[in-house]
Image (cartoon, rainbow, N blue to C red; front, side, top):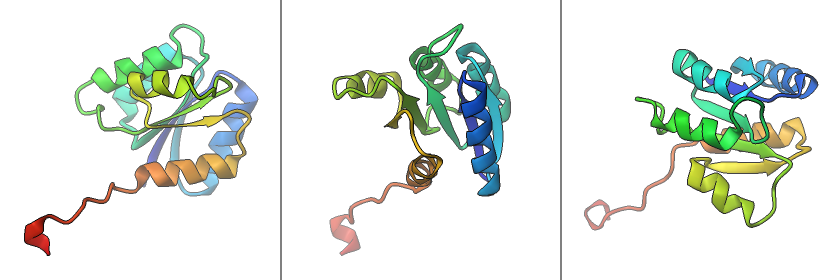
Length: 131
């Protein structure tokens, strides 16, 4: 089963997202701050992370950097879920290790779609020997 770490400081949003993900068959671990996100990522070993950016203790960008620095977690895709979704913010998100982002408020269906996209292995171009 696919494991999703949800990092969201708003309890209502965290509960809604957890409910929607579990209804789709995902195993969910949900936390409300950046420091707990790093701890949970290490112990839970998620397949994908949904990361709020404005968080208490450690912001989502720093939490993402710390998670990506942990052994075995560098390749875990991170979906930034943020109210700070200006065009110039995308470079900051990507530099911190986020693989995609959605602007808040995001419908649960949009989050589910983004998660599915992140879980699809990247396609590789055929090499000349494959032709």
